[in-house]
Figure (tube, rainbow, N blue to C red):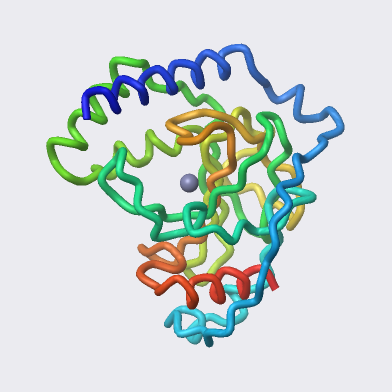
Length: 230
Ligand SMILES: [Zn+2]
């Protein structure tokens, strides 16, 4: 485990070093060339059983993929409920690999409830201490999970539905309370927090206190995720 933590530490250092030299908001304005991640989406046969889908069928559909030119990942490791051993927990969102600086779009019209305009990433020592604590506790404390997600934007879509965009390298010049339109550029993909596996957008759909897809068996999860983007 110590070796693993050491490797994670080096990876995080590289990530932070990249961030330090990476984008500010100005670079987002450049024409973005999203990195296509070719994926084959097979429509799963299972019927949706996610309770919130029955309760809020309209609220939990109609999202757009928040990065242009890519499809929703279908691999289990990128989706909710996938184990995250480095923090003794489970994934709560959808990971979308993309180059740092790729524009991030609002998945649906809503109101900004969090935008980390003055974000300061954790130091190597802070990160090390946090992961040591995680391993000692056997779970990830909420504050640590928030640090892992790095620089974030949250958008409230009403009815208890919130989308979260994490590991961002920069955020748009917006403020809490601003209404953003579906497809509007709100941020840029980055490495902030602890983006296991390199730059990517971590995208979550929150339903009340829970994350969308929590506990669903994989075939049903894929159905539920695909339904959200229709
Ligand atoms: Zn993620």
